[in-house]
Image (tube, rainbow, N blue to C red):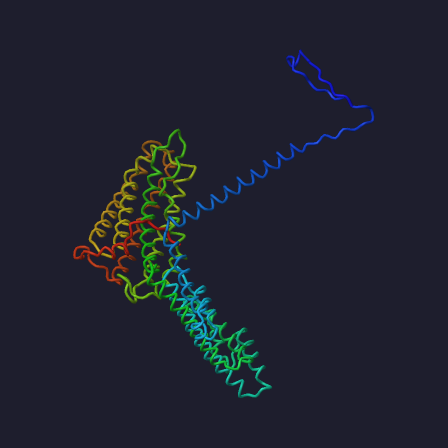
Amino acid sequence: MEMAAVTRDGKNGGVPEWRVTVPEGASVTLEHEACLAARAWAWMVSCVVVLGEKVSGFAKRIWKIGADDPRRAVHGLKVGLALALVSVFYYTRPLYDGVGGAAMWAIMTVVVIFEYTVGGCVYKGFNRAAATVSAGAIALGVHWIAANAGHEFEPFIRSGSVFLLANGLATRSVRAASMATFSRFIPTVKARFDYGVTIFILTYSLVAVSGYRVEALLAMAQQRVCTIGIGVFMCLSVCVLICPVWAGQELHRLTVRNMDKLAGAVEACVEDYFAEQADGKQQPPSAGADGYKCVLNSKASEDSQANLARWEPAHGRFGFRHPYEQYKNVGAAMRHCAYCVEALSGCVRSEIQAPEHVKRHLADGCTTVAARCARVLGEAASSVSAMTTSWSLEFAVADMNTAVQELQSDLRELPSKLAEESPATVIDAVQLFTVTSLLIEVSTRVEGVVDAVDTLASLAAFRSADAKPEASETETKAINPDSDEEAH
């Protein structure tokens, strides 16, 4: 093989080129180690960059969640503190010997029952404690019956009771437990005591089965009840005493936020409909036009928070037997109004729109009614937020009804006005008639929201705004916080 440098002046401007002459029959293998290494390095760098972007994006999302509601980060610290306190019973020898080696049940109790809100923690703590005590007592009774029935019948009685308990059948020894299993199908019991029924079945099965091999069954049951009680006490202490999050206040704030968003949605939808279109193109919806969706999607959160709030002790303006159920009625009235706003939003975003010169006939009346509806909802939100009653809400409702009557009068005169211009114009105004009718229906449903708020004010004994004493700074922040926190 020969190698020579040849100069080609015509093409390369005097730059030499290398030529390789290979004898006939020989083969040449070109190695690309440098090229392969460069590709591998580039692939590794791209993988590291992509991984870094994903980690950075995940960290930003985590930071945003904590920044939106710092109480979520505090909740994680509270759980860690509760676990650290209860684990002392496991790591300290005198305390460990005092609970008979069953300290792990206290740690499991903290992990299972610690919730974000005080109501959730009390709900699970009470259900776990009550279910453990009642199931342990029934299991001890079955153990006594099986022990006195004879050694040959004892395993059959125990296993049969557990089997019948799992299948929900009733015998004399497990009648109470089987009724508890069946009670999970009752809506009221499922909503309030479903967790307790589950713990009841679990505890009964564990104690009933363990009693066949464990001699000191009573001592074992006593130790487990004590350790579970310790776990429940630790959870409640940390949850209530350190930055408590009350489900009742969360439900209260959620109701106020939904009213404000619904008010903004009504006004934004009407303003978008009568806004002038540039070059005949439909403008994008306003920022608050989709606020009604939050109202429609909040039913599950309202039901959950109302159920947990009933378990909470009195705090601030939320005393015992506070009418949390009425908040659900207020939410139902708002959803009833939000469905109509959703239909109104569909007309606003429709591709087929009424001509601009037709819209001008009812533009002022519709925008006035929408503003009055938003004002009524805003006054109702302020009344609920401050937990006070005021005549301004009644005045706002009266102004809204007056505006609705004027709009209805304009709507009756519209066909004759359009017929004078052109008979075909009446057909073009069909959508305008629909939007106006929906807006009038919205005003009617807004009055339903006001009625629900009045009922809430009566049941919760809202104070009069005129005779309202100056609230303390702590109470003001608890009822009406400055930050607009989103519901979880």
